Amino acid sequence: MKITFYGHACFGIETGGYHLLVDPFITGNGQASHIDVDGIPADFILLTHGHGDHVLDAERIARRTGALIISNFEIVSWYGEKGLTNGHGMNHGGEFGFDFGRLKYVSAVHSSVLPDGTYGGNPGGFIIKAEGKNVYIAGDTALTMDMKLIGAYDRPHVAILPIGDNFTMGIRDAAICADFIQCNTIIGAHFDTFPPIKIDHEEAVRAFAEGGNELILMEIGETREF
Ligand code: NI
Ligand code: MN
Image (cartoon, rainbow, N blue to C red):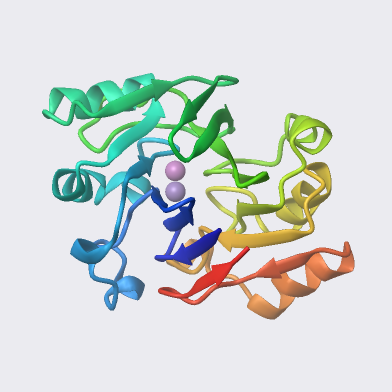
């Protein structure tokens, strides 16, 4: 499977010929100005929660591609009222089979309100189960003991974790999370986009290496095979 970083918490995941797009926030991100939002492929758009830095470009991309919007029930209903009725609502602990594989919506400790003030349900993360591998996308979250359940039963091959601190886990807690979820390969997200979440890259990589784990900080627009 191929993972492309589009900046902030936005990733494209290509698996089995399908394109999954997570938390599109391109046009509001000055660091992603070289990314063409109208050129990003999407068959499925996965939204972890309702904050603008995760959903800003979802409507634009969904209208162009006709992608299925997958999120919690409240967020999918909100898009439905905008006429984007190709949606699939989930809630915490629930798993469902899609054309690309299975997807589980898991807990995150954060908040979730949509850009117009509408209640955005409770925030979450996803575990993608495809090609015999599990990919954990934590979404915006604190470190929680619940993550140990993922380590015990889902053992992700790769995990996308927020590391920017202030609004989510910082470097130290994310490094602990890597141990909780029993995952050695971590892709960093939710860092450097705004002043309060600027991080020291070398310090971050070192913190994970001390625990025997690899932290990958992808360039915006970069694609890697996992
Ligand atoms: Ni958020
Ligand atoms: Mn966020």
